[in-house]
Image (cartoon, rainbow, N blue to C red):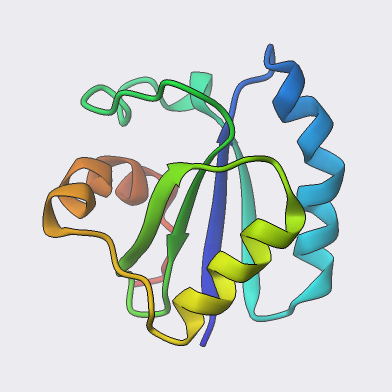
Length: 114
């Protein structure tokens, strides 16, 4: 199952800059995981209702366009890989309220060719 793995960061964030090389390694490690590095400053309108309190913020979306995970993540590649594996197995699914909160952002990213 293909996943879209979105890392929401900010250019000014040192933690994000440090995490970028590890995130890029993830993007090359699995053909079934499409990674997206997204600067939140480019999506102000879509994030209007979202309260991001820390970076990096990870969104994982499955092949059906269902939000599996949305939350801050300690910038450790192993943790992200485990979350992605759980999402592929169907073990993760965001609540309806979380999915509704993130819908404008996911729509703005146009992750799927619907």
